Structure formats: structure tokens, C-alpha cells
Length: 323
Length: 131
Image (cartoon, rainbow over all chains, first blue to last red; front, side):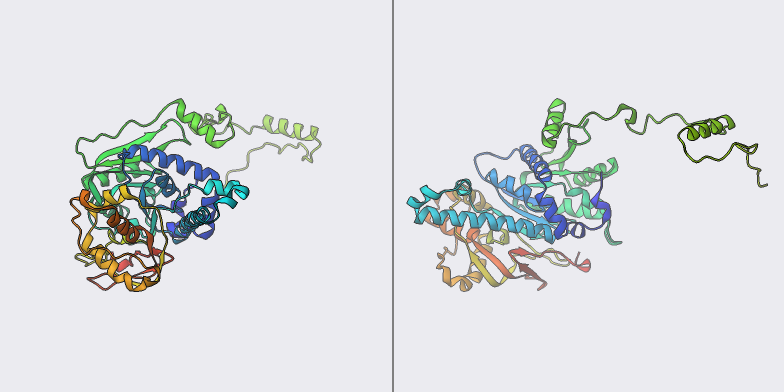
């Protein structure tokens, strides 16, 4: 798996081209949606009222869209201006659709019956987006006053804090600043669910340690730990001292989900190529290319009609040692 | 950016003590009507800093005379949301969620640092020496 985190700063990686690619990839959209749904499930928000949610690393607003569908109002911040522009386009589009449908239904209801196309029907219950965007780097601390939000989610963003792009950026310091500001801006009793892709287990430990140090309870939930593709890490944080992170999802469900999402069934890996652990035993030194082996090889080459040197008394003879 | 977000936003430039509320220097504003989200407003009110909200409305009002937006009361008891009538909630909704700051600046009251707003997105990125 390639790691964009290693290539440089998030705002440099997610440039206009990459942002558009990200947003238009149906696989990416599907995965982000699935993760966001799971994150919302882990948040355990009260169902009866809309909450005010912070989305850290909102990107092109894919997660925000899911929050909206659940009726929540959100504020998203991201370090990549190009990603935010994509999110802005989406929000503007939604708003225009909402405005146009409102106007349509006000003015020409009779005419609408005749020429209402599928698009308009889909847009009929469209509401303007509830999201607001902010260009901001989470590693420098969240710029909100204390106890602002009812919850916080973050989808595939936190791992960026584990890398430093300049000498001044110390991962641990940035993580600490992020978590201590998160601790402040959340309302007491709120929860935060942060999904991330740790490169190594040290990263996961570093992240959860920093979260614990600022006073959060909770831990990492790992969904589908036995699947390489469907495996997801969620850092679930709470203010309740006694809070224990729930068990991650496991088993067949994950495999099924994975296959559905891929659209194509992928055959099991060739067991012979299964990982690096089952490497063929090393050949003994000095073994291998003996005179017999070379003669046999040359014979087969000749049979194939390939240009091969004649066999001489020097064939397969050891080269003299220099010293 | 809406006033809803503005109400929670503060400056965290190094050396800022309070950094709240940010002053608004508006260039372009936008008004888009949306259906009143009463449960959200009621949920939000206890957290809302009404004084900051009111002063923000006062700062924006001169720029949006074309939309004939409603006046809001100068003070509301946000601790008891049950006594607030529908009309007031509608007015609050308009100002909190339907008015957008498109272009302009947010100014930190302590340090005077200006955060530019472009295409509705405030740029809160700090320079190396401000962290």
C-alpha cells in the first residue's frame, strides 16, 4: 500500500488534481461513507436532536455529507485548500439545487407535473448543506472556544500528524497540541471517533498515548483485524473515566463487506506466494552452479535453438582467486 | 462561513490570551434562505455566546441592507430555552445559518492578526512563528 504521508505535506499531496481524483473515485467515496457510518455509530449520539459536530480533516466533505444525512450540523477543517475547494463546490451545488427546487415548487407546480425529470425528483427533498469549512492545520491546535462541539469525527486524517515535513514539526508535539485542544473544544460528555491508518504499531501507540495523556478515556477499536483491506482503526475517546472502547467488528461480515465493495471477487492469494515468511530455504554456499549444471543448461539452450558457446575444457571451471 | 461557526471560532495565535470574539471586516456577504431547524437551534442556544453573536450581527447588518433581514433582540436568556417563541427562533436561525461571509477578514481582538476569508472559507493557518 502506498503511503502519501511519506511524500510530503498533506496540502502538497492533495493538490487540485489529486483532490478531484479522490472525490470522483467511487471506491474512495464508498469506503469513506462506510467508515463515516461506523464512526457515527461509535459516537452514540442522541437520536432525537441534531448535534453540532467537528470534522477534523474533512477533505472534500464526503464525511460531512454523511453527517448531513443524519441531520447533524458540522464544521470541517482541513489543511489542503484544494480539497476544501472541492467541498465548497459540493456545498454550493447542494445549495443551488435546494434553492432551485424551492423556486420550482413555488411558481409552476402545474407545469412541473409534465416535465419533471428524474433529476428534479431526486432533488425534491434536497436541503442546503449544513456544513461550514475552515482552512486549518490540526497540528497547531483547534481554533475554537472551549466546549463548542457535541462530538468530533475524523476520517483517515490523524496519521498525517505522525510525520514531520520540516524540522520544526515534531510529531509528538503536534499530536499533543491537537489532543489538548480537542479536549478543550469538546463539550463535557461528548465523544470523539477518529479513524486513522497507522503505518506501524508504534504510531498507533503514540497516538493513543497522547490522547490518554491529555485526559481522554477510551482506546482503539480495530474492525476486521484479520483482513488486510477491511481492517480499520478507530480511536474512540470519551470524557467518562470508566469508558471502555467497544469490541471491533470481526468475522465473515467484514469479508462480505469487503467483497461487495470491491465489486469483483478476488481469488485467494496463491498459497505459494503467501507472505515473506515461507521463503524457500537458502541454498548452501558453493552449491548451485556446478560443471554438470552448466553443461546441462547449455544443452537445453542448444535444444531451444539458442546461440550458445561451445563446450571447452574451461567450461564451468573456477576463476582463479585474486590474492 | 456562517455566524454559527464564527460564534465558536477563536484566534490561537501565540501570545493571545483570549482571542475571542473575532471582529468581522466584511467585503461580500450572501443570504440563502433555508428551512428553520428548530431542534438544532434549541440544542445550540445554551452553548451560544449571545453577546458575541449579537455584536457580530451588528457588524454585518450594514452590509446586508438589501436582504431586509430581521432585527434580533439584544439579549436572550439562553439558559431557559422553553420561553423563547417561534418568531425569535426563526430570526436567530436566519442570522446563524442563512447569512454567509463570503469575502473579508476576521480580526483577532488581542493581536490584530487578520485571517482572510475567501470563498466562504476562513484561512486559519498559522505561520511558523505564531505556533
